[in-house]
Amino acid sequence: MPRDRHPPETAAWAGRGTPGSQPLHALPRRSILTAGLLAGLVPAAARAAAAEQAAAKLIADTRMLEVNGRPARVFGLLGPDGKPGLRLASGESFRVALLNRTGERTIVHWHGQLPPWTQDGFPWPQTPPLSSGATHTYDFAPIAGTFWMHSHQDMQEQQLLTAPLIVRDAATERDDRQEVVLMLHDFTFRSPDAVLATLTGGTPAAAGTMRGRDAAGMQMAPSGVASRTSHDMAMPMAHDMPMPGSAHRMPEMQMDLNDVAFDAFLANDRTLADPEVVQVERGGRVRLRIINGASASQFWIDLGGLTGQVVAADGHPVHPVAGQRFPLAIAQRLDILLDLPAAGAFPVLARLEGSTRQTGIVLAVAGARVPRLGDAAQPAPAVDNTLEHRLTAVAPLAQRPADVAHRMTLDGGMRPFAWSIDGQYWPRITPLMLRRGQRVEIELVNRSMMTHPMHLHGHAFQVIAIDGQRLRGAVRDTVLVMPMGRVRIAFDADNPGRWAFHCHNLYHMMTGMMTEFRYEGIAA
Image 1 (cartoon, rainbow, N blue to C red):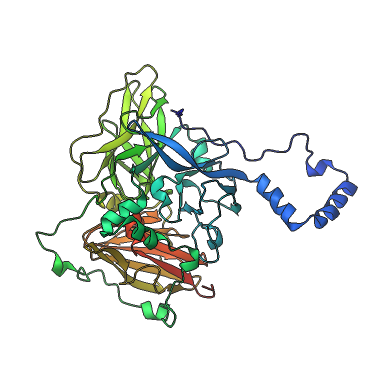
Image 2: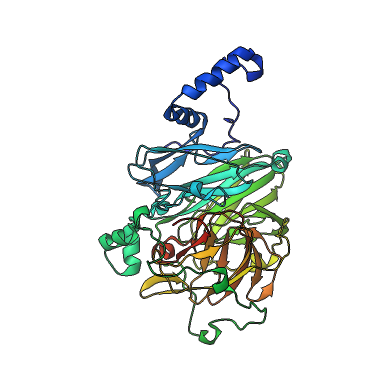
């Protein structure tokens, strides 16, 4: 299939008018009144169709991808320009008509955005997935930064139903930097059901039954079970609390890494056997937007001989942090500024934690010799929170006492392969009940030997402590909780609705590690 070696520029579809149309102020007053009367006679379905036509088209479809010489049918999300994902200009509304051409039901989550809960793209009973052939229109004010979109239906995310979602702001548009988007994936020729069956020790058919909990089956709390309330959650959160589970730290216990044997790791849909080569200017200035869209893999971003400055985490600005290697957990994003030398080719690599495997792209000045890169290198260490300790938010939360303080335990293991939050497994969970206006603090306590990248829908939170050490950390939507570690986050309950909170390791989520934050007054 043809490959585009250069990421597209900002989409220019915003503000397009109909050819030959006149602005409203150019029409006579009588024409305006007549048009208003006629509008009242137009059926609602026709008005909806007109609104859909005015929205940018995003198409969920299937496509063929070549991976290491073998063809594979995967999903894709193509924007109005025919390229993956969406790129919005500063001030542009998120006005998008999603058309489902996948041949099966799907629903797309706008990861990191803060829409009304009914536009979040999660299969609640009130917001079921789209049937094949159906279109749904979304319309909300986006927040600026590096985000992404992915299916929240079954395990379509593993089959690459994902894409970048880039929203520029006025400052980045003024900045004289070339923007390069790097999206990472883990890839397997096996079906997701077969992968899950390998992990659980079952069969693909049994795995299909496990993951087939669609919107109709998502009744959050078993009948007769009371929901958690602010009163129930009140608890002290002293900085010198002993580490929960620390008594179980044993020398022979080791972190569990990379439970899925993936066939390839992709950077913008390509491996290092045929990497994307992005042409850059001599002495160019680059804003690198990196998205870890992998389902179960974490990476170290390796800039080689270049030094970059991290200026945003999960789309939210941070004070610059310089370095050559940065950890990137599942679902997290980093914006890195690079000032390039006058000439040369510069690999930007993503090295799989606990492994010799890697992927990446190459930034190259015209005429530069592009080195041949292998997909193996020196073993990379486990991804950790070293960068998290160094990040400070440009726009932190206002300081105020917590109205709700809750300790949330993350648990599970490999035998059986099942993962829980507070001892409960999705969908039989008890919602965490919130009231609008509350400051909420959550202490995430990991009692397992795997890391958990925890993602909250519909809110941005600030990392305020790691293992008891206070921080004025980054504002994020996904944070990594280390084995036998703990992380405290804080957010303001300012977006009423039903919101998923889950581990973004797809196979952890599918075997139970998800819960709900629900605002009072929102019906189940």
